[in-house]
Image (cartoon, rainbow, N blue to C red):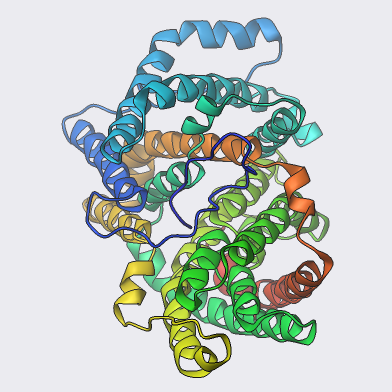
Length: 471
């Protein structure tokens, strides 16, 4: 996915619509900053743990409650913790954004509102009866954001704090601390193999459907990669690689966002109706969702449902997000640079004469388009794997998990919640209906194929591998 962009007053608020290539340099974009922030948090947590301490005091979250009085008492009792947590997040995100040229005077007030709303969402999902009504935090955040965004006109300064891409990338790097490197090595070939099948088939279907419906080849290619790989960032990368028209890339992004939001609700519901385990459902979501943030929301919602279902859903709750990450981040996201390079070459050598548009094919495109936060994810996994190697399995679960891994997981959930809420607050449903029927039909055909193939591969072909995560 691409770095988030500023949205001007009156502009359609579809997330991350700017069409531009990532800037080079280790501190020059949100992609790299997500790596440094995530790894810094993990290293600090490790340093405290190694000296007999823990990050638990800072990594605070609402406890279960039955009455509103209990909920308020819980927030008040940990007021200092929440203030410190806000200050830590504001410092980390604010420093990065300031160095990237964004206004802190706009970001900090906006992030304060976002943090307060996320705390309320966290608290609502901690209600003891929340699971009965499927009030999981990702769905609450998304629904609340959509209502507010489409009923009220939000001030321009508030957009500065809605950094969808930044929050999700930091969350994914932190997620690496909960996934041992041995698990990545074991499941990696499966995830990459499954992703390859899905990427090639979904792209082919959408591209051919688009051509049959009379769409321009470049537009059909952008739609195809948007559905086949990583949604928004894939559409942006491909649009730049083949030199598609700006409005074509924006239209592809709109369709990606539309279907990504739909799948947040459909896939967890379908997974539960079909009785899927958490890991298998996570793999299916990772194969069939169209954006990292939306997929994490769906996977975490299913994991939360399993956590509160009293054993009615098989598998460990965390296995849903773990399988999704292996499938999407390890498997599908690496295709962004590959598709951008291949299609740039095709556009240069085969399509250039037709449209007269010069597209640059360069092997460096693969690295330029590679999602750098994946590097942070793998490094985080490697670091925690090394730490865990000094403990027996029993001691790891008794000592390392509660004092090191659990606080990092809590901070990850906060970052995800910021992202889910930002998605809703930056999505105007009216703008999602203005794409036209031919692009919508071509992309929707690909969606249907994507879901079916993802289901068959996750539930039948590779089910044993994925269920190994949730034992």
